[in-house]
Image 1 (cartoon, one colour):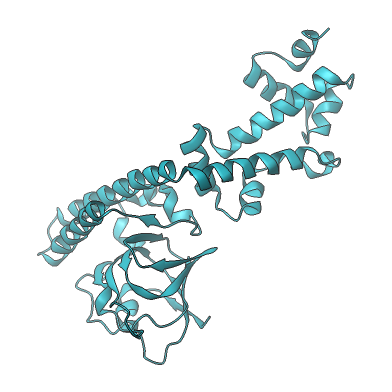
Image 2 (image 1 turned 90 degrees about the horizontal axis):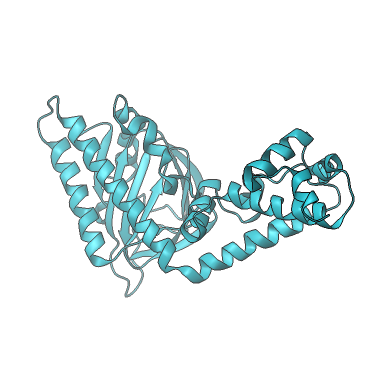
Length: 308
């Protein structure tokens, strides 16, 4: 699907998209309807060195983010961190017969703009920047208008004469936009219960299959990364999904399954506790004892005695 193109600066993207130079070198709001990629461009993969927050409609070709592809026929937001890959199946500037013209906005924010601000450390903590990207954010018309209004306020501020308050005001608006996105994602997780509950069942099946293996002493304990990779999701996305359904993250689900298997062996076999710990993938029995007591308020031995 086309060649891979690195675009390190916001100015470089403006040039590539045939736009006038940005008013600010580290932040830019782009009208997506004005973007004009080179006409001979067929497919493309972009790797950028800045954050890209997109809100698009009517893009006539599929766009690819991480593991999934999207049709942008309705209001959709996407969030890319630096060094993530965005791909386009075809050049979105080429109008298909009967297709509507692409519309929307791209907000580009270079990490250097965030130094010495509240977002310098917290920007990447917003889970939707690490979804790789599994699920875009679908907006209602009211929500879309709200986000566009924040975009415009950011643009108005960086186009105004710069003073000592400029960066602080822009960052506060950006933080507001991200917090709204977090709220809307949470709603999306809750309202899309069917696929989410299917995911919960998949996690359960994966953990069941993992602990049923006979070589856990060699494999060790299952990790959040392993479960995420098996489901083709990023760790932060999987944890967000599970928390919205059960209030527990992936690690807690692993621990719960672990305790369930431990109780099974403690209550139905005469195996020594150290051997059970090794069979479950623990490198040190003391770690098993500590986790079991933390989760059940009993040591493994005390739990076993309740069955004698």
